[in-house]
Image (cartoon, rainbow, N blue to C red; front, side):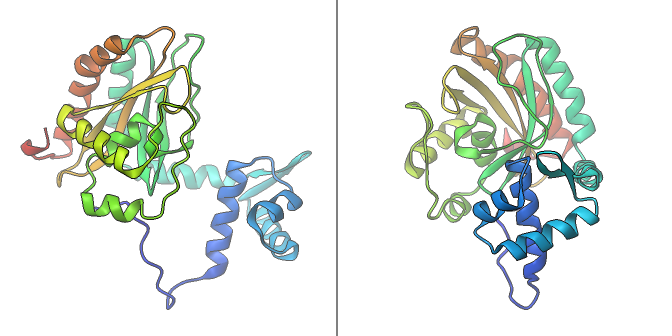
Length: 263
């Protein structure tokens, strides 16, 4: 199963539906949003943005607050429906709880969406100085341990197609800066079974992640452990990954019918 967006077939393409989804994603990323800010961000005409916003507002997909538009209650039910369609969510929740109990750090369940990862569940630590998670958060896959874990189960051909023309914008000196570097990092992940990120998403942040593999050997999701560098050495994070993370993701993979060759 590929994570690539299906090719657009003009026979079945409804431009208005696409624009509505793009606008909703923009509101999610830049909430609260005004008509003016959306017009500037999207590069569309103001009348077009106004009509779409009013339509989505009347349907409950957007709600209007004092400072602008935010996602509305309809999106909660849609989001819950999407989450419930992920068959491993309940089992993964138990695994998150177990890993969190063992390591005492934040643990996050993610899926791959194109070149991004999306948070679908998490349990946070009570410690200070941690990277705070939010359900639905999207991050570039190349900057995250979860992204590396998920991409490691993607074929070389699909990887090249997925990142064709992609602009790498490393936020720290430690970040992956090109596709060639990413490919080499993914080879390490495949051999080791899990990914490690050291201050690549943000300075002071480290994480480890392992994929949950389905019956055909693809990554259905990934679980990561997120820690502050000031409190956790890389050696400690490796121990967490090998003693807590890998056993949990392997058990989930077995439940999904992952082939023996996947490990």
